[in-house]
Image 1 (spheres, helix red, strand yellow):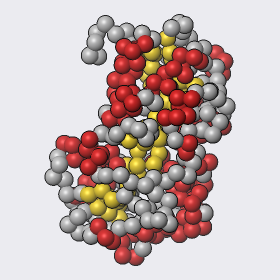
Image 2 (tube, helix red, strand yellow):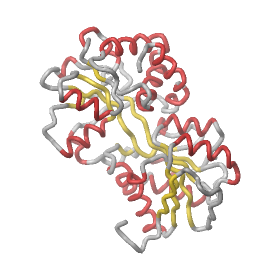
Image 3 (cartoon, rainbow, N blue to C red):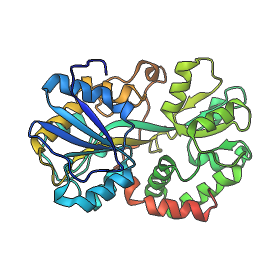
Image 4 (spheres, rainbow, N blue to C red):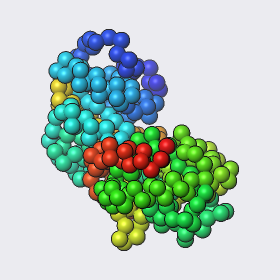
Length: 337
């Protein structure tokens, strides 16, 4: 850590070696599925601003949810942070959150990126975008996610595996927009157009375009951003899909958080979430991973500004959780591996 006087974050990897954590009144216990390296800077700054210690327990979201359900009122955790909206929805269905009242959060976070009952709130956005080779694809030929199912993209499309939550979320939101039958036709078209078996990582999709294995793909924007930050000459461009007047906009997913039902330090937890929605914290939380702030009054990372503004899908993000099981079943039926 930059400041050795800061007692800040005790990272406890969530294999939960101990079932007992002593909690003090002036500290916060945060369970987080977000990579610790992406969150330690804002947590460190929160300590500097408030003097409140944070104990951070990081782990896989399924392990975190299982632990919270098992421990119930014995859980030491005050806040849960996830890396996708589907997990926030799942936690809500398991009755793990408590609704909170905060004019600050209501003001700073758009309605479609927070729970209607104020159980959870988005903290940063990742856009699911089309990437392409400008050497082999004209910008004018691109339009929507659905259009990539057309025959003109036969053997030219690369995708990440259907096992990733990012594609499950995208398909879930497509079901909300198009219905199951129409979405299934689109996904079948994607599968028929694949130029390679689905990849394990978004960066693999980008590299496949660079290497000429395919011409277009779908990835989270920040994977391309990171690569361009290291090498601005990468021959891959970004395209914002679904921007037409009749289209619903780019699919975005969120990292988000909520105050847990059995939080021992509810008021501190609310203070923490309020702070995370502020201008300074939004930059600290989003910039490390090149994500977009959820607070519309906060400008994104400088490289992201080069890509310009885009219309995002403002259908409520909870649809990605409600339709997740349908999306997974649909992808299996279409042989999307």
